[in-house]
Structure formats: C-alpha cells, structure tokens
Image 1 (cartoon, rainbow, N blue to C red):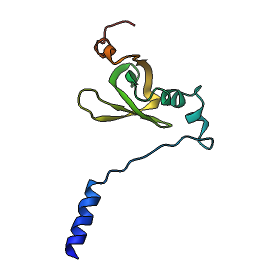
Image 2: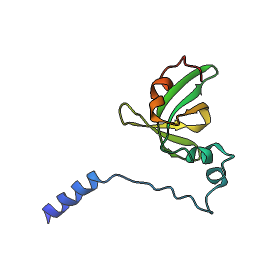
Image 3: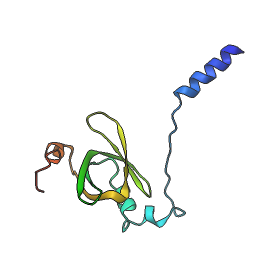
Image 4: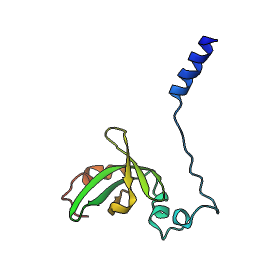
Length: 115
C-alpha cells in the first residue's frame, strides 16, 4: 500500500498541465475576429517572429521566438536558442515582425537591419 502511494506521487510529479484553448462560436470576439490583435496573432501560431515591447515611456526591448499560444492579454514565445517559453504582456507590444521563412532568423536578430 505504501508502494502504491509512492508510485502515485511519482506520476503526479511527472504530470504537466496541458491546456487546449478551443476557440468556437462561444469564444469572446477578441479571440475570434481578426480585427483584434489576439485573434490575428492566433493565425500566426507556429511562426518565427521578433516582438518589440515598449517598457516605460521610451525604452524598447525585443524578443525573438516561435509563437506558441495567444490569450486575451498575453502571448507565449518559445526561444529558438534555449527552448524556453516566455510569457509576454500583449499590451506593451508595439511592433511585430513575422518571418515568412525560418531562414530570416539571422536578419531578425540584427537590431539595426531595416525591413
């Protein structure tokens, strides 16, 4: 009986929560109508992108990664270099450059490259 409890606790430790955001006609319009940023970005899931954020009044910073998921107020970017997931506030996004091919990563990584 003690072994059963240990086995169950090991299984619980190995479980990870997996969410599946199912979008249907009952979903909020912000997630279904492409005139809204979250709905448009949902059409770009899986693409490589450079996202620029305005921090404070005049500080721009960027992140590059594969778009994993989009919520009403956030996006998830998977880093190409480390495979880490970064949670990003959608309201501080100012610019997004979406790559049409993975080969554009080198150009997107150059902060002084003008598109």
